[in-house]
Length: 185
Image (cartoon, rainbow, N blue to C red; front, top):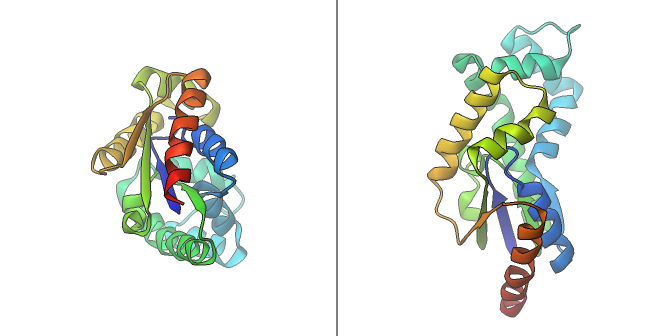
C-alpha cells in the first residue's frame, strides 16, 4: 500500500509517519529530505544560484528561506525543484509496494493521485507557530509558509484526518489506523 501523509510544516506529520511506518514496517520517505538532497547536487545548486541570482558564498538555506517572500523567485525555484522531486517520488513508489511518503506539498508536486491512502495531520495554528521556532524563520516567513501550505492542504480530500494534540494523541491514533491498513493487506 502506498500512503501519503501530509500537513502543514510543524503539524507533526513526520512524527506520525514515523510511528505509522514502525507499526506497519513500511519504508518511510520524506519529500523534504528528497528536496534537500536534490538541492545539494552540484549541478542543481549551480542552476538555482544562476536562475535565482543567489550569492554562492552565502548560506543557501538562508537565501531559500528569503525566496519564500518573493513570489516570482519562489515560483522559479518550484519550477526547478518540483519536477525533480516528483520524479524521485515516482521512482520510489514504483520500486516499493509498501511505502509512506511524508510530503507537505503533494498537490503542488502533482503526486496526489499516486497513493492508495491519504492522511492529513493537523494541529492548531498556535501550536504550529510554536513548533516552527526550531526552523529559525522570521515571523513573516512563518506566516507566509503557513498561508501557502494551509491553502494547499485545505484543497486536498483525505481518507483520514489526524489532529495532533501531542505525543499521546498520535500514539493512540496510530494503532487503530495501522490495524485498519493491515486488514486490507
